[in-house]
Image (cartoon, one colour):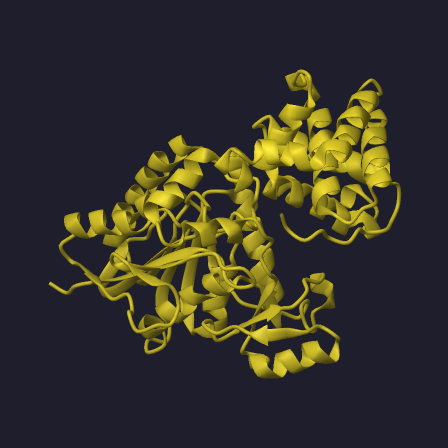
Length: 445
């Protein structure tokens, strides 16, 4: 069990719990995700608590659901997924947060009234008080199931164990803890040593990351408005592993001012922006999701950099002018199994049957984009997955059917481990997310 977290103070305890239940209910019924969490649904001082309740509950969901199943005489109906969410929230508070037990029980049960389900207050109150009385025995009972004890769905636990027999336990442990807040310093304004000094002056402690040359990890997350120069584009929030894409493309871009670069599947735009901060390039960024593309535009505007943004499908070519690119970044859609700690609803929403269609899409993207690369050009394939089917096996199959593809993934770096033609990073507590990179060069005829 993790260390318990400190409570947040603020407005109505029932209101913030009801808001959390409303946010979780669509995810519990497979109708939504936490991506749409509206932190502004509660007063400013309660937003930290709302986020902790929602993300923490998802992070511990397999165990919480098992305990709920034992506590309930019969499961709630589908239309009462919001009440189910309240029960899970109550269990999470009792086991994982430093909220006084009377508040965790009373405010959570009382929140059912705000959902117009007063009948549920007695059920929730009874379940949570039973958990208080029988906590040790009930936890021991559900933890007999390994997937419950390790808080991962069985299919994913099996996949990790099979793929990484030496590392799977560390991956699982990292997935069950929130990832740190890591910054990317814009070298156009400051080097990261100078920026770290500015953070220290503001009372924000952090350390330089060992692998990405622009990265700083904060000891404690903060609101971006507290970061010196954030609105002026001096710094962005981006995981260290994600920042490595710019370093990997550096050898192809630095010697070629004005290089034509494609960022396929570019949203939400962190890697797009990093490339523009680092290199003098002509960058085209495409994405099939118009709403996410708008976020890319906002990011580039804040940073004062420019790219050609197009709403387009990277599996098609109707958007392409026919002029080859010098470099292509393919940050492919994937299972997200390397970033579960940042998107813990993946534990609920992702299915074993999702992996094969994702691998098929990745194959289509590789095959469609490769002809757009000039001879001698570089394609960087990236995912935030730790599953070989999406990573090393995907690239191995691509190389087998693509004679002019040559592997240039560096093997003299200190991050990750060699995995086929690429390098695999695993999520690490207090450090980077899980990522895979493979760098390929198109041979000249």
